Length: 169
Length: 380
Image (cartoon, each protein chain N blue to C red):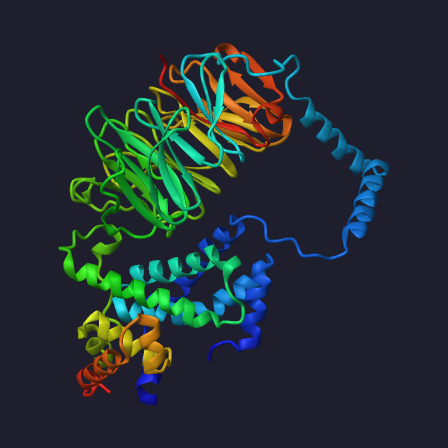
């Protein structure tokens, strides 16, 4: 359950005015979903942490300019999911020289959960629309806006992804 | 599809709580550093003035208050007989001085130039240029402030320049990403896609072409070869155990010792493995600098300046003590002087051989509040 709009506006207003406790409330309300969304797209805990963390740092940099009438969640999720897609694409492209923390692969997400494996097998773009639609509960129109894609593309990616996931679900 | 949502919410995500707490530490620190919030327009000034007046009266009347005032007076006093201004440097070379107005370049003869609007300047390897940052810009500058090149990058921090006569490179942070760009401003890359960096300046290993150490957001020290994105320790793990609250990272100038200063510890790493050679407890160190040609390090913290031999087991030697905060320590290139910013006394000290102390007063007036020497470079 996300925070109420009134709470969120109050936290943003407080954080803009210098209240660390309001910032913390905002962070704690949004971190779990931001981190989970990033993780489901990149399937790497360290990368997901970086991505969600950088999204919050970007939020702090833009805090004074943030329009309090707009909800904070979609703005944050746009950064998280777009960065996660970029990261997943880059990882697929480069031959990874595994170093240190990356040397030990994460456990298979969800252990023996077939759904987790099925999501991991999807292309990053498809994972992203599934996460936005079914974890963060955006409409296809909103997803199209967040990812700057035609709505038809979002719908087709969703359909293909759900077909692939059908057996697991 | 509700079932799908429920299952996505219940999927196990590794280190969920630990990641949240690590991220919160970083976010809270970034928030604290972002500068003052706009001042709300409230009519509190008369109340504040009354409260301040009450505090002053209480301070003067009560014995503990008088003790506090005595301490404040001590801080103002500083070293007796200090020079009223910086007329020249007591050893060869040029200083970079950090100040809220911007970095100053101070020549050996005491002449100086302010690079207004920039911050966090660091010398190029031969001291011909400096690299400096603005909120969303990284630039190489001549020492007169002429911009040679600049890059637009968000939230630039901690630029550090390294190299030899043929190749140079600059490491810096943009947000929590570690980037490396060539000395001519080309080929800016996210350094090997490594884990995000803590707000600690990265450190190039002296004597090696492009070996860089940095601290991850999890407090681990990573040392790697930037050119090949490969492990430094011959294929063995390059990342140390995590250490809480990292603050500073610096190499000895022979490249054999790497010191991580945390809130409570000094962690000494060598070049044979990622396991620490020594971990010593020393709290609240605010600045550190290796003495040239040695494994001795000068350390500043509230009330004292220390020198510690990292290869020995002796207690640190107190080389100067006084009330208040010491904001920076920097060795002269020949190792004959240790420059110390004594913020609360509004003085810089130059500690020399045999306990000699040369002090310069009036720093605030000459360079601005909290102006501190941060790098001493390149005689001649």
